[in-house]
Amino acid sequence: VKKLNIALVGLGNVGSGVYQILTKEIDLINLRCKNKIELVAVSARSKKDFIDQAKVKFYDNPLDLAEEKAIDIIIEVITEEKTAYDLLSKAIKNGKKYISANKALLTNRGFEIAGLVEEYNGHIAFEAAVGAAIPIVKSFKEGLAANKIQEFYAILNGTCNYILSKMSAENLDFDSALKQAQDLGYAEFDPTFDIEGIDTAHKLTILAAIAGNFKPHFDNIYIEGITTINISDIKMAFELGYKIKLLAIYKNLDQNSTFQAVYPTLIPITKKIATIDDSYNAILTYGNNCDWNFHVGRGAGRLPTASAIIADVIDMANDRFTYTFNCKADLLEDAKIIAINDRHGKYFLKLSLDYKLSKDNNSVAKLFLGGSKINIETSFFTSNKNGTEIIFGAIITAIKESDLIAEIAKFDQNLVKSSKFIRVEETGGF
Ligand SMILES: NC(=O)c1ccc[n+]([C@@H]2O[C@H](COP(=O)([O-])OP(=O)(O)OC[C@H]3O[C@@H](n4cnc5c(N)ncnc54)[C@H](OP(=O)(O)O)[C@@H]3O)[C@@H](O)[C@H]2O)c1
Image 1 (tube, rainbow, N blue to C red):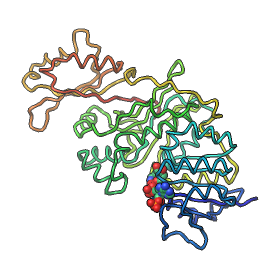
Image 2 (image 1 turned 180 degrees about the horizontal axis):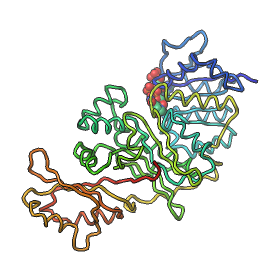
Image 3 (image 1 turned 45 degrees about the horizontal axis):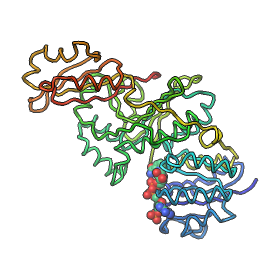
Image 4 (image 1 turned 180 degrees about the vertical axis):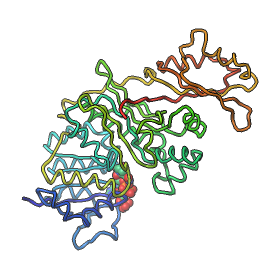
């Protein structure tokens, strides 16, 4: 039995949670560790009152921790990417084990990091970077390791899920729901990364790399956030039997290609994933041997995120290690990701129609006749608040996205004042 000394870099939201668990629950943690652990050093831009400085030494420069012979494990929970990378590379080169929650870093430099870890025979773990308290990284690398992950559908951003849930449950417009999320501390002052889908795409990149043994490829992922979703879309979707969620979607297609995208999606109300509201995250996975599998939990927050980090610490103290992206770095392949225009699936089509012209029932029917590739599955009409426009909403049967766009371009513009579509995902499983 050896003792492993831990350094914690970053003492903000997540870092304070890690400190709390490592101090208050140290006996329980050590009960579960082959090699005992102890927090001995911390670093941040500024000192914090909650640190017991008699037991834990403060370092002004986090990079100095990577040089300290006595440090075995570095936990990095800072927001700044450049310092995080410098710390990681120095620490790995100096033989430290490394834990990070930094999804942007793992997304943007993941392949390089995997190579570095292997070159120096190092170890890195990042359970907290995706889905926080949900053990999805471990699940893909360990519990489901005997499977080809064929598909997953994931709610990976608590802020977006909170906003869409509030809009739906309380009839709130987007801005009011966002304001509530900010007041509760779910959304940052600048929420762009969350609401534009970028944070979700970072997490998709990491999970897809693990699922398919790919080099992380953020740039090729199609990303659409939730800013274009309004209360009318949510209500109409509900009338048609669906809820709207921001999903990260991964599908393993034929010919070694994959579909990887982030967009708001209509999901049938009858599916469990459609019922995951508030700031919870969820991942619905299909593996070729395990069949469908469903994880739900807190995808952000001080203690839920720290919980995942401490699980990585316990793994390291028990000498449990896995490859960075689930195989040796030089075996990771370039993912072939198909273009969004080639998506083949169902769509929710919403048309705003001229009031007078739409009174003639045939005028709307004519839009979908004459060789149109659009086939209506279910539809209904409603009107806007002041009754000046008729809104037509329909679920259309599976079609290639480029064909749908071409058909919409052919609509009579005197009748159709504006149009939009939202993709529909009818997942398997429960
Ligand atoms: N919040 C979550 O729920 C959550 C969930 C999953 C993953 N994460 C990830 O966890 C990481 C930390 O997030 P957070 O919410 O805890 O952020 P935060 O509250 O803003 O805290 C960031 C901490 O990092 C320190 N820091 C920033 N730049 C530094 C630098 N160059 N050198 C030294 N210290 C530096 C800050 O020091 P000062 O306090 O002195 O300014 C602060 O203590 C991020 O990578 C985030 O993406 C967060």
